[in-house]
Length: 188
Image 1 (spheres, rainbow, N blue to C red):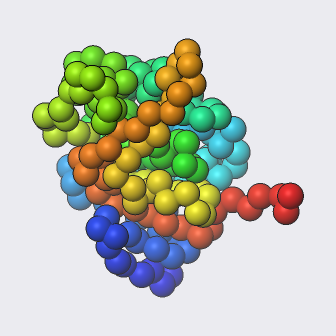
Image 2: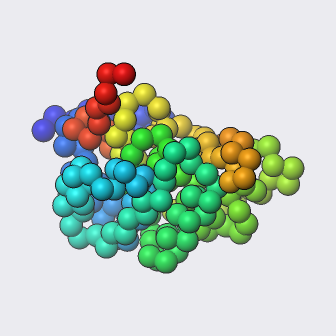
């Protein structure tokens, strides 16, 4: 397998089979209990079952509560799943919505309050004052750039107003960009 490495500023492992490097990467960091954050449709596809076969040596839980535009409640439910699993890291697996939720699940899992209190324009915005759980991203769509962005867009639950959490602290530690995971879409 031929992989390329570069940074944007996030280190990126790019190439067919990059997904197969995730387990060893996490183990090398001393991590053993990842929470995979993905969307409910992707969780049911063979691509997820195949990815899970490459995570031997890890005690994995899957949160597949992402759907549509990500909402604050999806983030909070993901944080609850993180705590329930006693996770020590997050694997974001999916398109822009799943990755946006995965990037910020660690905030309410390790900080007080609702994720909405961490959006950049909240009148009493809370700082991300503690280290966040280790986070890696595996994009399954091409073009959103969410895997390398330092912002996460989540919608308010009731108004559906899109809000932004913006911080370098939410950047993935490593991106595993595997073209074999990139899902095709219908031409229309």
